[in-house]
Length: 422
Image 1 (cartoon, rainbow, N blue to C red):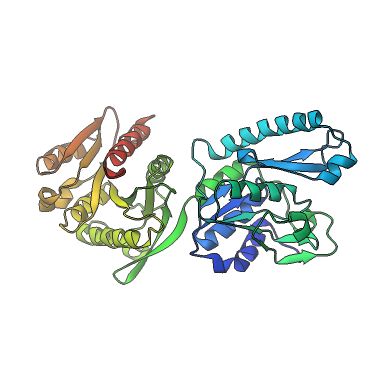
Image 2 (cartoon, rainbow, N blue to C red):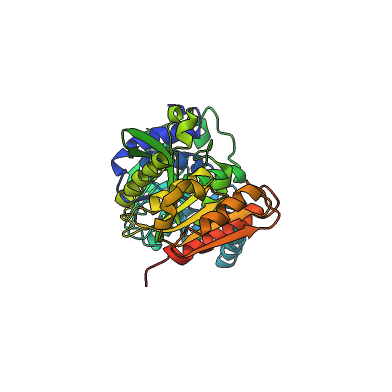
């Protein structure tokens, strides 16, 4: 069988792994070519995606021939037959490893930035590559996952030679491969498109893969969303978008990524279906939007496993801020903090006086009409609250540095009020 590209191979592999859905899985892709395959698997399993950064140890005289591989956390595997046959001494081996270790560290930083690795402790780890050749890098990745505390390690590849189980040895608890072939020369021969995956593509796939697509039932309709839950999250922030916006809002996505990097969960979702959003009356129906936010809150609390007792926050923009405050005013609401970005709290009307959770109102200094409305609404808030004005900023905070300042304020507010309970 020939795969059109790595994405198709990933979808094919995901079908083999379907029984793992809902089993507390983490998917680790081997960069670079294994990450596009792993991204499809992670999406199908509804699992977080991360990289298992590995480097081949090539023979000093023949760098293209692997004598072993290294991974993060100091994991190393060697092919004793190759090392012995080439008479590689310990000093030469250490020299090769030192060079590759430096490159491994560089790539780890390039791929993840400041984002911490996804925790694998007591979870099923699915290590994914685009195929198996020598098996050295896959073995190192499996060994690394086990060192980090994985409960079970599954190695999954779209294609491999018939002796691949022998090559992997006992490094994985389970091996999954839909295409095991006799006439195996190289992984690339089984792909119509085997173009090299770039570092930039890996970074983008990781950014998208940290969120999983979800569907939220809400009073007879289903709302699409993207849920991100860092392993150690104690709180999750639901985003209520403003009029004419949705879960793909670049401004809210920017804020959500910063919250996730700080260890907070996020849910970006559409408050209205496409058909409903076409009716402007729905866009300004604050009661309806608040009801949808309540449905999403119930869904997160029910589906937040393995996170118990997640604390809830709302981040609202424009009319979405009014919906967030309306929903937070419900006496039964579990919300622990609200942040309004350029919001219209005045549209929450009489419900403002019933909001008891800590509330932060952020407004641009040059957004004069909205600033006036926020100052008036502030007088109605009875719970802990602050109004912060960003000098020189207008309604959408497009000015250099303005949105970053909003993000830092929101992050600190949520970390203060949604952090671990004393």
